[in-house]
Every structure is written in structure tokens, then in C-alpha cells.
Image (tube, rainbow, N blue to C red; front, side, top):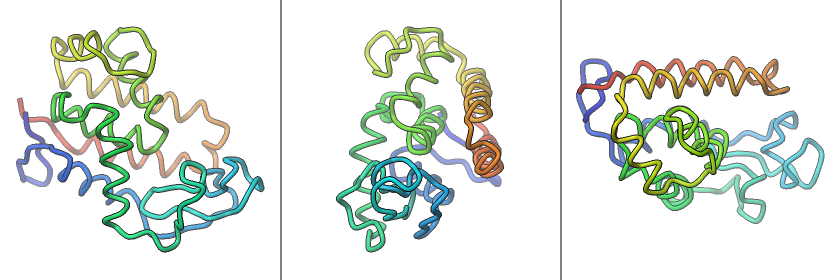
Length: 181
């Protein structure tokens, strides 16, 4: 399966998913209201090392975030996100959405949202049962339900009033990627 964006048809693999994802992630920021920028994972707890390319201090407290290179970020995304959501084993047009959610809200949350979407046990681990259920579901339907669940999750967060507009725009931009079955 492929994705279509701006009349371009492409297959999603890690390199393409990273290219699409990095468009959502900006350069360095150290917004003190963003708990992810703090090494303690809460506003004012630890050191505000910030976020760069979406790599946040709360997840990587010992990393020099400010001087992180794009190649270093790509290696982190491959190892800690794409591989953990089994991006190479998911239908390509769904893999990007799960990968993007894992980056934005955590690997376990991204996987649990997929499992909720396909009606399997929400344990946060992609195993044979999750993969089997994904492979029998209509991919376009799965993408719609996955992103509806994602929006419901975001609106339930107390930080939605501060960061919700960006989260919703991120999902809207992802939905512009239409699958080509």
C-alpha cells in the first residue's frame, strides 16, 4: 500500500515516515509550560533542557538536546519508535499514523490506541495477535478510527487548552495523507 500526498504516490518506509514526521517537529524550544522540556517530566521539575526535532528532555534527560543533530534524532526515532511500533510489519499507510502518535504521546500510548482501534487487548505491545487483527481490518477504516481515537485522547488531556490546537493540526495534516489501496 502507498500514500498519496499532493498528487505524489509513495510507499511508507522508515525514511519516508521520518521525513513526514520531522515536518511536525521543529527546531529547539524550551517552553517552560511544556512538561516534556523538563528532565523531571513535570513543569519546574529537574532542568529545562527543552525539545529539538521532537526529542524531549523528559524522555532523554542525559542527552544534550540543544546540540542534537538531525542524524542523531533519526537514529533515536528508528530505534525507540519505529522499531517498537513494528512499523515495517504494519500496513504502510497505517504505520505512519501509529509512528507519529508514538512520537507525540509515547510508544505505549500509540500502540494501545492501535489495539483499541482494532479491538484487541490494550497491552501496549505489538505481538502476533495485534498484527493478525491489523491485517484483516480495512486500512482506510482503521486510519479513520485510529485518528478519531487520537483526537478523543488529546481532548481528554488537561494541557489541551494550551497545546490542543497544535495536536489537532498535526492529526489534520496526517489525515491529508490518503491511502491508495
